[in-house]
Length: 145
Length: 145
DNA sequence: TTTATAACATAGTATTTTTATCGGGAATGA
DNA sequence: TCATTCCCGATAAAAATACTATGTTATAAA
Image 1 (cartoon, chains in turn yellow, blue, orange, cyan):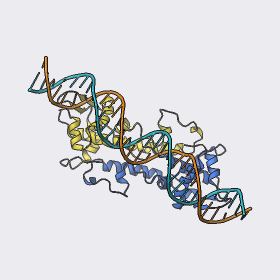
Image 2: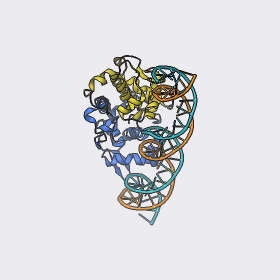
Image 3: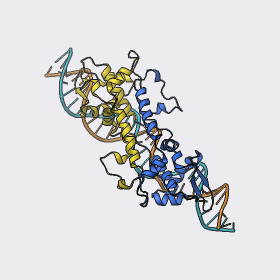
Image 4: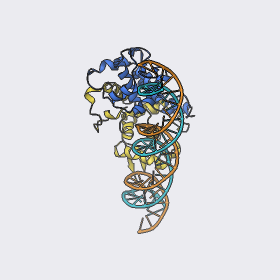
């Protein structure tokens, strides 16, 4: 039960942008260099974040990305869900598709719902600002998980 | 971030054995029929459960499996960990291998550790007996997630 | 107005993981 | 003996993952 690298990179990217906010647009190239992640791969991750309204973008020279709100106004749950789709531990809780037609008489559904709930409660209780604050070593390169 | 079908099947299998405990050995064939899961696939799942001491087995005619303890003495966490390896949301928390050499200066490590903790606290708080109790419709086929 | 820049879009690909299936053993009760 | 049932390893198809490649489009700066 692992979070994908896209999900992990998305958090690192959002932290990176939050920490390097100066009013200027922040380019993929800069983030990629600081985080040691491929530019092209980051593009794939930043795309849903922009479409989802978590980032705003500007094209052309000296273009890039900026946060659309203050770091305290993002939950980590919101960021992860944009990338991962849903943090549900089983597909039948995803809502979109009704894979399981045995929900009424399912012995384990309530169990998985409970797990889903504690996961959501946790990730929705931590903000991007919390992650930025936690990162004490702000002078060091931002190598992260 | 999904639990594998093996993990889900393992829970269903343990519930099935707990509910059908009569002092007789319970065969894979019976479980497979009741749960509508392939016998061969169930064999792969039951193997680590037996090796891990969660089940005891008997070969030969009228052989099969039994619980090694009472249902109340199993946590769902224990069962899932035997099959899934670890419920850690990121690999660097798995302990076995030290994939990440940047732990000291990692902005997100504490966040993932916190998520890992709430997941473990939840799955270690629910017992197999809880799942058996929850399953009200004990007359119906045990179709589950 | 040109041009370099950087976002945006989409397709391809190699690797790994998942989800099984298959074939045959080894033990054992009837 | 012998059918049954657990046990064990190999194989294989399918899906997901983690990138890579090749562009196109908008735009600020020269």
